[in-house]
Image 1: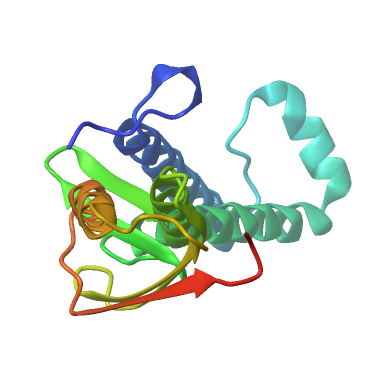
Image 2: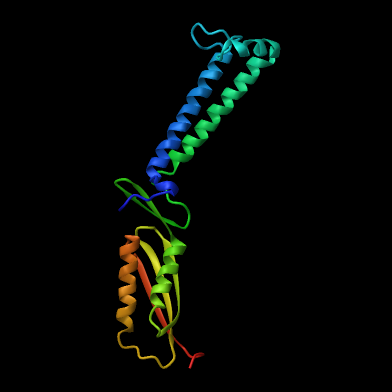
Length: 194
C-alpha cells in the first residue's frame, strides 16, 4: 500500500515521528527542569536557574515561589510530553471504532467503515435496475460480516444483475483488503416503483 499523505505532502508516518520527537523533547525538558528545581541534578543548586544571568534577578525576586513554579512548569512539560507520546505511539496497530486499519511497510491506512459501505452502495446503485442499496458492515475488520440489501426496480430484467452485484463485491473486497466471514445478500423487488 502506498503511504498515506497528510496535508502538506508529509506522510502520516513522518508526521507521527515528528510529534514523537517533540514529545520526547518535552519529556526530557520537563524532567531536567523538575530535577533541577528539586536539586536532584549532580552539582545542581535548587535555587539556581537554568537560564542566563538576566533572569537570575527575576528568579531571586520570585523566591520562594520560583522553584515551585519551575517544578510545576517541568511537571507540566513532562506530563504534556508523556500524553503526546502515548497518544502518538498508543494507536499503533489499534483501529478506531468504525475504522478498518491496514498496516503496511511505510505506515498504516485507515478506512472509515461508513465510507466503505457508502462506496459499495453507490457501486451497487450504479446499475439503473437497482433503485436502492443498503450495506451493513460489522465484526472483525479483516473478516467482517457483510449484509447487503438491494431493491430492484419493478419490471427490470434481472439477467446479469447477479454478476453486477458480484463485481461490486469483488471491488469492495479488493479495496478494503478483507474477505467477509459472513455475506448475506437480500434482493427485493420494489413494488412501489412502476
